Each structure stands twice: as structure tokens, then as C-alpha cells.
Image (tube, rainbow, N blue to C red; front, side, top):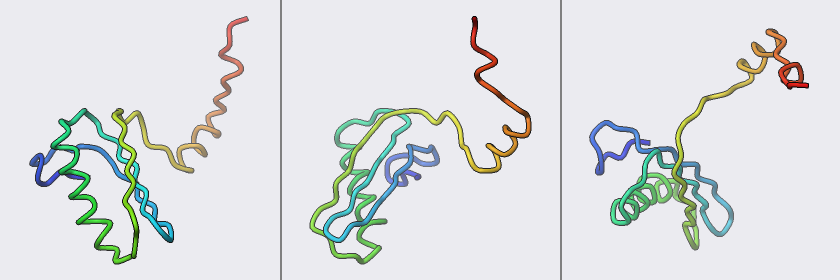
Length: 95
């Protein structure tokens, strides 16, 4: 997600949006804290650009906001490769 109105080319975080029959749920994970005014502006932008553009009726847009950092990206290919390397965490335990 790019914060086009808030920052020029810096990544702010990621958002996952899930539509139900009555509401839309969003999980916003920021890579740094934002001021309350910036945060509400960002949520409004997400609502306008992503939620409303889906053209689905809704009663409410519920957003949970977290601050964290990206620690990795994992896929089936990653786990297949790790499995082939025979990584076993039980062998690493101290006795």
C-alpha cells in the first residue's frame, strides 16, 4: 500500500480487506506509527479507493490497526525448499 497523499514513495504498510454481507473488515498493519490525523486520513483513503470502489453494500467499515515490521514472506516454495534441506528444530534443542 502506498500512501499517495501522505508520503511520496515510502511504503506505509499493508491492508487486508474482507467483505461480509453487512460490513467490511479491514486489518491495517503499519510499519511505523502515524499521528491520529494521518491515520484517519489513510483509513478514509482506503475506504474511498478500495472499499467503495468494490461497489458492495455495507453498513460499516471496521478497521483494526497494528504497528509492526515485515519479518519475511513465506510461500509453499519456501517450505518445500526448507523441507528438502532437512531443517529439524528438535535437533537444535540443548540437552
